[in-house]
Length: 124
Image 1: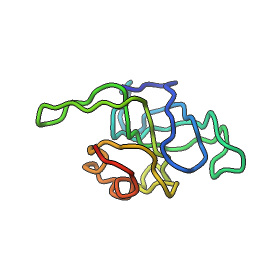
Image 2: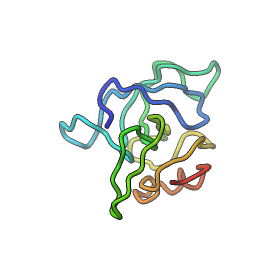
Image 3: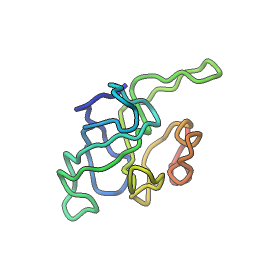
């Protein structure tokens, strides 16, 4: 459960380190974003001379959350941090980076983000 002003770590190699959520598009006035949602965020911390710059507004896909997610089979999935992957655009399902670090949830692949799933180290 992430809301506006939540800080996410970035799980790709675009050069961004921290992203702050500033909106949840296409969801009406919903206040929380969950695993697999696309959010709009601003870069709060980035390495110098990277693909993205500090202050840039980017769409990002949530790939890990601390809050557990219940699956259809009754099991739950939960991670140690809140993390996202920066996307090309709001409508595209392509990542901006070329590598994905750490595990991602299986729900991401089920939602059609196959390129992100194929780049990931592990899928849980």
